[in-house]
Length: 318
Image (cartoon, rainbow, N blue to C red; front, side, top):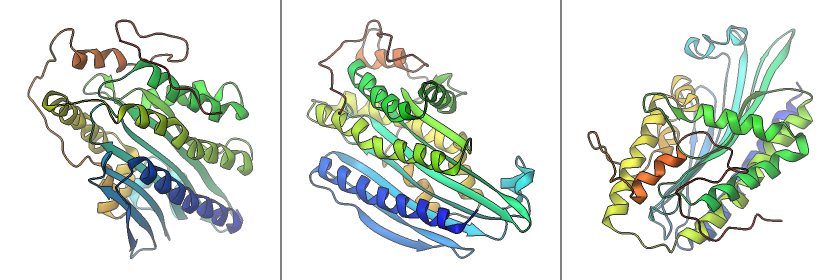
């Protein structure tokens, strides 16, 4: 694969990082992202941008990385033997937002590209990415807005794309040891190399470009909602699930650590505070207990969650 493709992807990812940071900082109103550039001894580097103690976001990060090398470590090729002995480039942007207000959902997303090459053989390449939403006090209309924007991003590429990527997200962000989803899902795709490069790249851009339209209207509606010690304690307890997923199940975290990535940037996704409580059970009929109605796969665009209070809907952006 000609390296101009790699350069095109890199330019897009750097621009996406800039746009995400600008939009999120504006939504916060007070906090600013601080940049930390870094180099990887084996090849490559990145720029990490982190916002802390803002008016909305207790912690937010938007990271770009581009790492490369002569070959992947054995731990990364065990399941993909066709990659052994190939040079590689792995680049992407990942972001995570941990708001202070428990009524504002946590959210995560990433878009990435991987290519491995060997003289005399065709390159092995693929795109991956997606975004997902993790509310603590969910509102049905917010979740439906989230999925409407996700579906609209996928529609130019076929009617089957949103259902497939939505189902993949539900399956991927599943805590097997808790028997629950991490949140209310969104989109997830990996190993995308169907068709030609241009269409796959277009899908990646559509996902990355739609995140702010999906997330910021929810932030605007919820950031003034009242909360107190009870809501904060529950938020910190549920953040523990987020940590559990990232350290036990997340393939991106594992690949980053196994390939010698920068630990501080890889673990940027962790919340600033979290708590664990032994055998916690929310009070029956409480808002905290209602969360369980959301933590399983659901067709949010055609179903209505029973027993969950509705609020005014958020209009999807034009």
